[in-house]
Length: 243
Image (tube, rainbow, N blue to C red):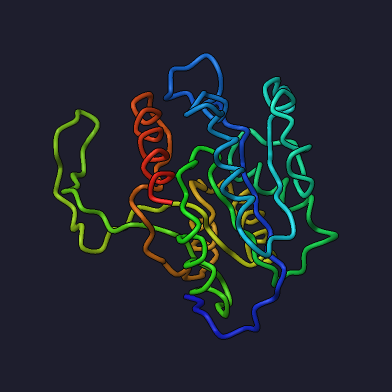
């Protein structure tokens, strides 16, 4: 496995938000990133948080070609450093399109933060911790939380096969932060070999790298199912009150 060696941390940092998904598990009439949440859309909350991250050269959002909801938000007017690119049918294709849009601006050792459009509750302290711990890392890493529930391996009949050892299991979150060149190469390789890419880290792992895990907050919720929307609203309210 390829581990890290110290590298000087470049000043350039970019953020990519893949937002071309349709969110089928939400059972909603519109993609989940455009659902209403505490007076804004989910995507507006997410971009508002990311726009507050210091020392970022630009944010790239990947949306579907036929997206009819994005123009109504007028987010490009609010955030001048925002770039919009065409998203792909799969998450990693959206990220690749965004990386390709940066190819004339980003250096191979620049940092890229990839964040889910449906994680509007990301806390700036988590992003600061991620960037701090990875500032001299050669590869990158992700936010994650240790698994607290007992996990079962289940066969197709929904019968329990075995209980997994949760002491070595972590639940991946975003942002996930990697060097531009390594991330692009890893995603291209995964695409060429038809490998399943559920997050950016999995592509780096397949390429032989060992990303770091930085423990994040448990309220960095990913909105996936209908009940998550109300929970996200409560979390945002608590966060705003605390601030």
